[in-house]
Structure formats: C-alpha cells, structure tokens
Length: 399
Image 1 (cartoon, helix red, strand yellow):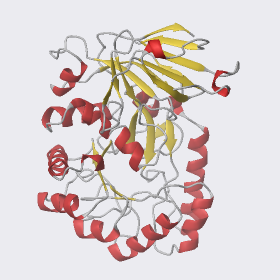
Image 2 (cartoon, one colour):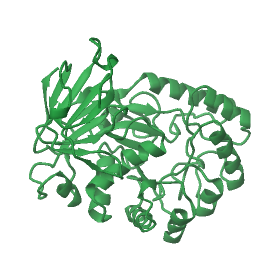
Image 3 (cartoon, one colour):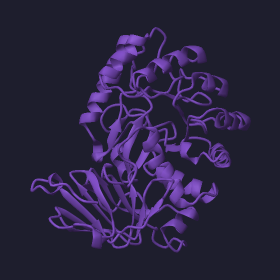
C-alpha cells in the first residue's frame, strides 16, 4: 500500500511491528494473513504485509515481535461499567485496567445498571446515560476504549427521548428487560425508535440477573427484535435448549455468548450457528462485573473454551472476539487491515503448554500468554500480569 505524504510527516507517530510469526486478521473470511509486518501511523493501520515491501523508515516506535502472534485487540461486547475504574458490584478498583492485561482493548456497555440509586425516571435515566457517555469518552483506564452511556428503557419514554439521546452522542441502549419495560410490544416500539436514530439495542435473555430484572424468554426476544440477543447462554440462567435453538433459527440478530453464563448453552449456541453456516453472528462478552466477580481473562477463557470444546479452529474463535464484534457493533477496530484502529495483542503459547504452537495450545484448552497490548498505536502494557507467562515475548527496540 502506498503511503500518503501526510502519513510521512515529521509530526506523525509511526509504529512498526516486525518479525510477526502469525498474523491473525480477526476476519472470518481470511483469519490468518500471509504477513510479518504491520505499520501504523497516528493510531491507524497503514499497511499489512512483508517487511521487504513495507516502508519502515522514520519509525517512531519499532517492536520486534520475535515470532509471536499478532491479533486485533479483543472486544468485550457486554460489560457494566459505573464510574471510572471502580465497580460497586464487587467494590473493586482497577478492574478495567486488569481486563486490558487480558487483551481487551475495547468495551461495550450493556447499561450502567449497577450505579447506586440508578434513576428510573425518564429525565434521570437520560441524564445518567449522557454523563456516562461523556465521562468514559474522556477517561480510558489502561487506554481501554469504553463505549458507555447505555440507558435502560422505561415506561413513559417517547420517540423524542431517543432522538435527544442520539443527538447527545448516545449510541446504544442498555439491556432491554433490566428496567420496567419487559413486554415485547412496548420494547419493540422503543427499539424501533432507537434504531431510527442510530442507537443499537441489546436484549437481556434468560432468567433474572439482578433485583428488578425478569425472565425474558424467546417469544419476548423475537417480538422485540433487538440488534443483539444479549447473553443468549444466560446471564447467568439460560433458556431451555429448544428456545435457544429457536432464537438462532428464527432471528437474524447477533448471538452474544458470555463468560458469566451457562457454558453448555454457549456450546449449543455455537453448534447451532455452525450448522446454520452463520458463525458471523457469534460475538463474545463477559457480562461483568457480576455476582460471580470480575474476570480479567474472561474473553481469553471464552476463546479457549469455544475452540477446545466447540470444535472450531482457534483462529476462528478469535474472530468472535474481534472482527465479528467490530462489524456488528460498528467499530473501527477488531480487524488487522489498513484504515482500522491500531489496537493489537501480541501473544504466544503459555510456557510448558502441551500444544506445539499458539493455535494448538488454545485448541487444547490452554490460555495463551500475552506479551504486549497496544491501543491506538501506543504500548499500553508489556508482559501481562494476569495471563500465564508466554513462551516468547515481543521487544521494543526503538521508542
């Protein structure tokens, strides 16, 4: 790819990652790329290819991958942030930064529902959503990009409320069903208003997860027709098997599988999507923080579990947490391709894993070791404090 003059300007930050042993694209169409070098300029990928064909001159930062794998940064499609890097659900500080050490570079809020005293009147819920959107846009713990400000719909909302929220920068709804609106007819109308103004919706699926939530069964999910079938494997309690398969078969919407759900139901969802030849609908989240805690390695654990028990190649399972989610959530990250955000995870098989390489180790159920996390072309962390130690690690040779 030919660079523009602006990408070579003296003030540009040019990141070169070379000696990549395995390049995982994040895209189902071609999950492994024949490339060993990536160049980004000012936080955007400019070229992906062989080092001999890449202009690596004038680099601000050079990283020698030392043969490790490069993947897009992972995207957690389902989190519940509240304020800063603190969660009242577990009264824990630093949870978002810890997820970054698990390779997560982007988070999607499914509603700031754990906020103490969460307002449920229309004026209050809109104000809280706009505040969350603004605050997390400006504050990025560990560099993680958090798409927050997801209001939970309540009775009394009208079309103008969704127009106002969209104009203020709100781009998603919190889980439908966690508020007062629990019937399919009302929810469908509000989801349609949200969609009209470019706001994406997610619906709670399965049994109640917090006080005030309720069972949302497949009939309500199908009638509501939200953009994402949130935690289809339950958060925590899953629907019966026949209802899960019906959602896969009768809806065309995204199938979100989460860590804090039913693992058997997760595998059923994956198997059904595979039989339907619709793996592009599968996305991953943690649905955390939750009663079961904070899981910094939740996305890695989902990738490993689906690859080892779900009979999909490890490189495909990684696509569920990267390119699939990026496409469904309309994000500029998640794929290793020119023009995309330079969000990367450099990883290798864990030391002493029985797998001969990274992909085989994941296929056998082991978690990989993370050697570096990069967000917007800037190194956010080197060797992860949370994963098992990687066999090989990248090195910054110029900074």
